[in-house]
Image (cartoon, rainbow, N blue to C red):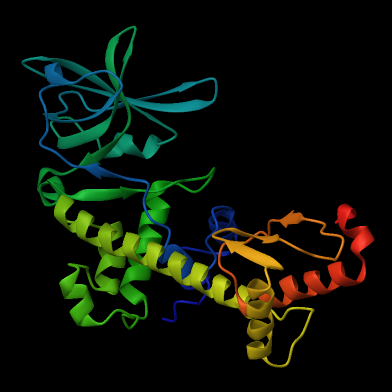
Length: 312
């Protein structure tokens, strides 16, 4: 799959979903690959209910003794269940997910992960994720990406799209020579792109991030260099065919004490028989050939129109 193709080529992304992705600046597979996570979720060992804290994302394991109950409040569908252990009791709540009543049966064994808040009737975990113990075992100590989201476009959808993009992308040839990467301990580009999204651990994340940060600075410096060269190539409106003539004239002016140079400016020492003295400070630090043409043109003007110098 070409990286410049629309994200609509991915499974589960139609025209409506593509417009949601466009709100966060994602139109192509390449845009999606470079939509880096803003953070990561780490899946740790389940805790006892008594060890949970308010306003944190926690993980608990337990059996449902009585299954789940569904209620409707002001048109809002709510599914509720309760788990307990030797240290306490935890209420589980899901909104707009009535089908969960068929999954959360009595004596079913799950691991729940979600944000814990305190309500009037005690600790509550709202909209928790559910895992079978064997499925959660595979996630232990892994790092899952958390992306910037928008209304209608959740983290689960973005993560799924990134997984597909990584699976079907066209691998790019690394522009950095292998020797340079090894000398600077930089990851290969395709490895960095994959592991900035799905690192197995902190070390892989740091390795991938180091390479991508290097790229950002490298391309920034290239852009600055290009801009500098572009500006240096701008032709002066006061054209001279031979730059050598320009420099010879400048040397003659300096030798006759007509003008003098300091590190960041030049002074008109003697501009006319009247002895008028004038300082002039250009907006540059390094004098180029084009600058010399401007200086000499300025000198010529002062020779012709001595009386107008005070207005320059």
